[in-house]
Length: 329
Image (cartoon, rainbow, N blue to C red; front, side, top):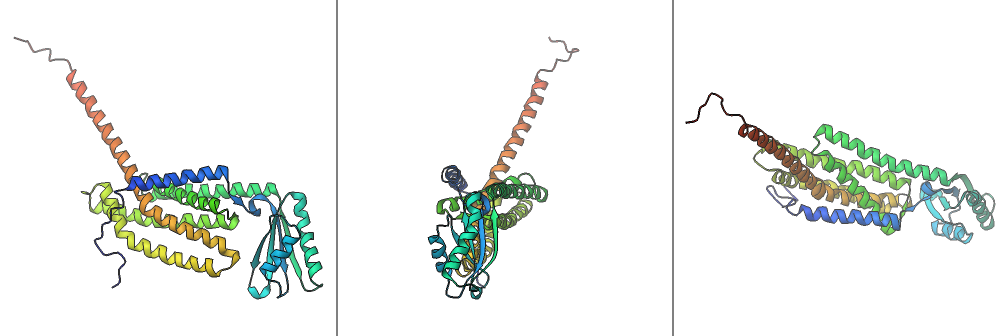
């Protein structure tokens, strides 16, 4: 039988855990710096803008639509093909202030009337999202991510215990931040569909982390003689084949969407690809390492409290008053 990882393989994943934690910490720090300097390239969903849904003749492809609309001076232009290719329907998005946004629909209609005859095109709908509504939507989106992480913290605490839950949430936060960092560097537009992809990644990555944690718990129960580092390393090795197969098959599927799905879901699929790679890395190197660090912290804390209690008891015994009935010779 074909096996990616041979049984009994023991790769020392946790031996250099401080290196992985340090590299991830630097990557997150760099993302925060870039966020406050370069910032995300927010789409019209979060900054406000106009959307016009049009239908054009067969002779007009997405490049033709983009060139004609760009020539009309529409700012922040973005064109997406929607529906089946044979329908030749496009969604034109533009950014601007409230005054200019109300003019976008007229500009689009003017371009189409100038280039095409009546009946050769249709404008199905025209929507405007104001800057205030976009800002509110952006804040709500980030709050949704926060609440998702909070619920996962509660879930992991109930299913495992307090030694596991911080590692799971920090690993998920790490995945989200690194993925955002990729968008800051590439300056791809960050809109609602990217936010939806991030929320999907939080669930996907958490599932992978839970598998590793479940095996860690089983290993600790079955082999109490192992310290937490060896138990975690053993669990990660035992779930490694499953992690690789699951992540690889999911990545191939998402890669196919990115390659053949068209412009509509290209950025969504790109986000999932980045998130799958980062999430797999964090499940193996970050979440497991955090369990070790947190467990060692609580064990040392318990040992210190126990030692302090013993010392206090011994002190009381040493300072006890002598037996008053005893007479020294």
